[in-house]
Image 1 (cartoon, rainbow over the protein chains, first blue to last red):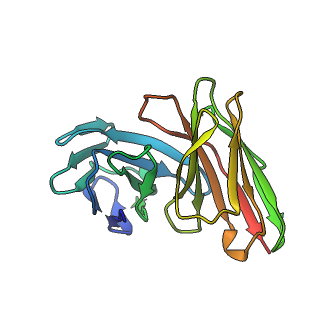
Image 2 (cartoon, rainbow over the protein chains, first blue to last red):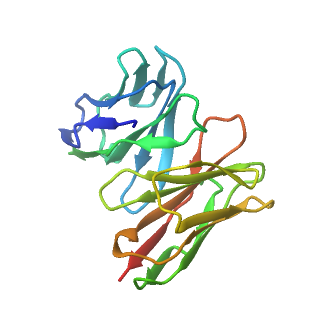
Amino acid sequence: ELKVEQNPLFLSMQEGKNYTIYCNYSTTSDRLYWYRQDPGKSLESLFVLLSNGAVKQEGRLMASLDTKARLSTLHITAAVHDLSATYFCAVVISGSARQLTFGSGTQLTVLP
Amino acid sequence: ETGVTQSPTHLIKTRGQQVTLRCSSQSGHNTVSWYQQALGQGPQFIFQYYREEENGRGNFPPRFSGLQFPNYSSELNVNALELDDSALYLCASREGGQETQYFGPGTRLLVL
């Protein structure tokens, strides 16, 4: 059974600081997704990482994937309040029909 | 906006009743998945349909069933509702061969 673990589960940070969210998964996968969810809202796709060593950046967010370590990171640079949300990573089991297994989420609060 | 719509937005049912939730995907999105998200947790995969056939199912009992229609709409049916079925139900669609899944706004179901 595929397990996806995120840490930390809760993150409170000051504006302007940097931090990293970690996503570990338990079995072979070559596809990893990052989503953002605002309170009471649906999921917004942030990144799709498709190969070992993949790195993608959008604004203050950068995601990377190490399939050998079964680890993805979401790095936040110079956080701003608008980044406050819950961030989920999701993994697809190799050979499956792209059904996503999600982590528990990291609730990020950026303080002024 | 993802182009994926769901109805209704909110629903209250009592234990033992049946419910049908609806999802309308973008034209060309021939794959639709349904997820259940309990409060404070990550979404859990229920099942996936591709060209009107179920081609993947998560760890949910048979009282959760679905349909996909040729016009890119789909349904999630839940029979014999239980209190634990209270959750946000999300549908996600994608175009065949594409990686990104687009989530709808969700239906929040409360079972009393």
